[in-house]
Amino acid sequence: MTEEKAQAPEWLRQAFKLLNKYMVFHWRLGLGPMGNRPELAGCIMVLVHTGRRSGLVRRTPVNYAVIDGKVYCVAGFGQAADWYRNVLANPEVEIWLPNGWYRGLAEDASGLSEAERIPPLRQVLHNSGFAARMAGIDAWHMPDADLLGATSGYRLIRITCTEARTGLGGPGDLVWVWPFVTGVLVWLLLSRRRR
Image 1 (cartoon, rainbow, N blue to C red):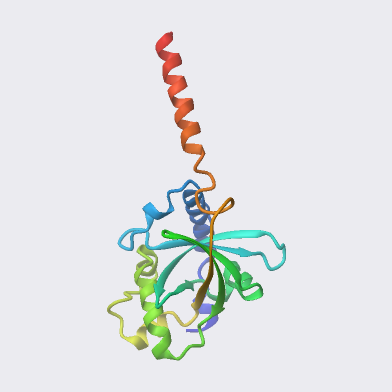
Image 2: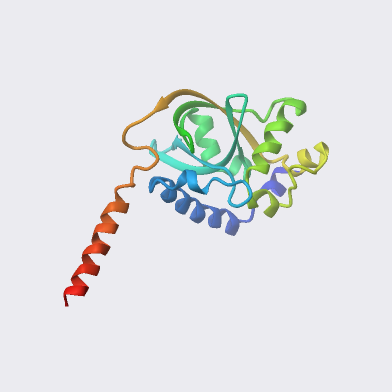
């Protein structure tokens, strides 16, 4: 498959960008771990990276798999994915996983041998829920050659966690919204009853 064939239609890339905004907001509200189900939306983490041109912090939800202590994810849009190019330019990243928040060092693992690349690639695609199936990929049942052909434009990223993080600016930074909204709703309900 050529790089041109690997490029997704622009409408699909835009649809994913919109969905990604929702997923990041979901994580910031503290709901990220609840949505991690491979049979539905998939195992989703948030990858925090630095814009290669802007220098601004960017957050991108991606499907992932943890194998032998390393975190793997796939750039399904290949080299066209902004987050992939940002990670190549600055491999120091943070990841929001259901079990915690970590600093890490990312590297492009696309050049691994087929024997090393196929297991993490299969696992990430299996963990992607509907996304791989939408692309026509049956991660568990495709022969290796077919899987490699269908994903030839994809980029496999391996992240080594270097430090656990805590504090402000991580997953759940908007969790304060829940008590605020609840308080407003209770106040409105009580105000209405008094009338």
